[in-house]
Length: 461
Image (cartoon, rainbow, N blue to C red; front, side):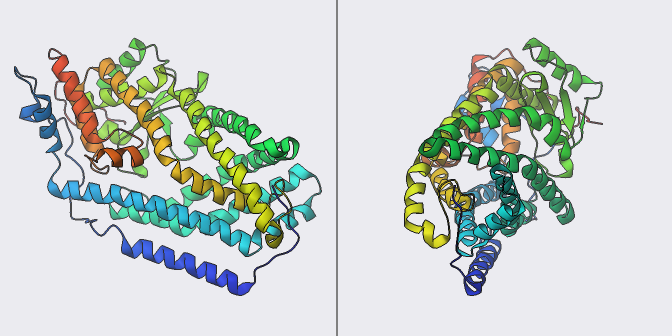
């Protein structure tokens, strides 16, 4: 990227930029999410609750059954869920503006150039001074992003009753994430700039390959080295849930060596499960909220969805698709970045595209482009999730469990968006779509029945 000679900003510029960041943070904190109300009972009660209109009887009506499931949420719960999710639309815009502002601050204040100069004084070896710059940049970016992160990931999550973390616990996890980013990010940025120096104007094509390789590498290391930094993973206890989980896995030829539960309740009230990793380190994980607060049909339905990701090889597919999306963005960055350097590079003290001090400029351009590519990215992920939904319904044969789990997720995801809204903002099918699909499956498979199970069937401990 680019290296620099002079700085163009002075202390007043830095004070003004910092003041703008503070004003933005206060505006976000005080001006949004007015509908959040701690008095609202956000969660649905434990257990499987099949509405009468959704039970499989002669003359079963899909639309009537779907509406009966949707009516499980009270008007207050719907309002709270809509406010939380719709507030997220604005939050994405604020994150873009804030991120671009933070990158502009690093450039206009001359901090990025100073960090590059420090790195060059530390070592004359190119890839090592890039690593030193990257380390300084990652720390500076963490500090600049901290106010918005506190609002979005701590204060707002508590406002809607979704987080169990104390402020100290949240900061501890933020620092752990910074440390992991520090280790991986400094190496990745150094490799990236090596590619830029060697590939010249075709750096973006090399970068696409590096993005793909790095995403696969993260899929391999995350389950083994990163996830355990935040949670404890333990084998499932003996009992009906373990029997059902292992039976479902074996029936779909999923390895059972790395099936575990993890203690997500120390961080969140959300239910979830996930499949992570590739090849021999693939892990299927269920969080303790899912195990302790839902029914066996729900657990099987969620697990069937996650097994679908594994069997359909979605981790690799998403790595390919995401790389293509990033590749498009990087090509556009290439076109705009060189022009920006020609116009403003000398004034900002930036040398050329291989100068690491220009990294904030490149990232600012990338943030803007990726923001407008969000609908494409969301559509890819939403399509993959819909495939896993279909697989899970056929594998677990628990449509009521799937509908119930979808309604639990809908306590913090807007239940029934408009078509354009879903296209732009949803990276998963909406709760309405998921419930309706499960009722279509029920109509076509009337003989398959979900037996209501007591809450806590899946005791993690």
